[in-house]
Image (cartoon, rainbow, N blue to C red):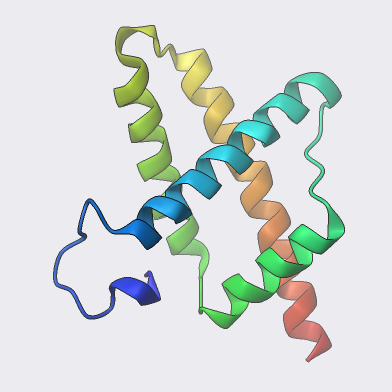
Length: 115
């Protein structure tokens, strides 16, 4: 799933590229959650979205990959929050991630159709 992990049999917990990706996903999902709460929609800057769409398309990301990352994100949030993580909180994170993933997937389709 991650090209930088292709030469390993296990996911190294301290891999700097994996950590960097996780931080980006976390931050963007957090920003999406805030936007959903405040504006009722997720807006990603056109340049950011174009870059995300093209890089995900280039790396061969497919729908199941988005689901794996979503599950990892939700497990991480739940683990970090412990007992404070309510169903409402988990649902908010899931919804924010889904909106972000949909925007990226739509941009991937746009990039693919322009080639």
